[in-house]
Length: 296
Image 1 (tube, helix red, strand yellow):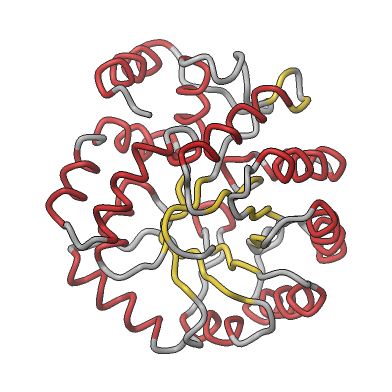
Image 2 (cartoon, helix red, strand yellow):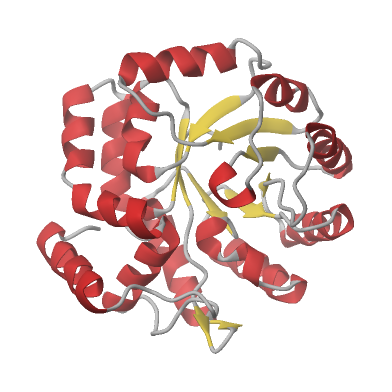
C-alpha cells in the first residue's frame, strides 16, 4: 500500500457542500486506472476546510467506491482530540490507513509534534503515514524527529517534501534519511513537479495530486521510474512542464481543481471559499495545455 502511485483526488464542493456524484466519479476513475492506493482528504482533498461530518461522509463514500484499491484518509486537525475523533471515523468507514500532518495555528515545537504522533499512533488499529508538508503546515521535521516518530507503533510511511537537485543528490538525501528509519517504513515523495527525480532517487512511493485526476498519465511515469527506465520517466514528466509551472505558481490544488472544472469532472466553482480556481489568461493557458496533452 505504501509503494508505487498513491493518488490524491479532489473533493469537489458545490455551495460549500460535498458534490457526492462528482467525488464518486473521481474515485471510480482511480479504481479503474489501477492506482496502487488512493488517499482522500489530503491537501488536494480540501481537508482543512471541511467539518467532521463532511469528512466522515467523504471517508464513507471513498470506502464504498475504491473498488478494492487500498484506501487512506487524511485525519489532520488543529487539536489532538479532533484528530483522534477523525481517526475513529476513518477506521469505522473501513479505510486501510490514515495520513497525518502536524496542522496548527500556533507554531509547533518538535516535542509537541512528537506528542501528537505518539498519542495518535497508539490509538490506531491501522497504519499511519506521516505527512511532512512544510509549505502548508509551516513545520519542518528534522531527520531525528522523523526517526523518533518512525519507531512509534503503526507508523509505516513518511511523505517527504520535494528534494531539489539531480538524481544523485536526491539519492544521497533519501539514503541519509532511510538509514535512520526502521526497515518497514517506506519513503514517499510529494511535489509532483520534481517527483520523478524522487522516484528515480530511491523513494518508494509517489503521493500525487495530479494522479488524483489523471491516474493513467501519472502511472506511466511511476511505472517507468520503478522499472529503472530513467530516460522514459524523465521524458514523460518533462512533457508536463507547463502543468508543473502552473503548480509552482498557484499550488497543485488550484490547478487540479481548475482542470476538473474545465474537463467536466466537477462543476464550477468546486473549491471552498475563499479559494478560487484559475481565471482569465491562466485558465485559458491551462485549457490549451489540457487540449494539447490529452492527459488520462
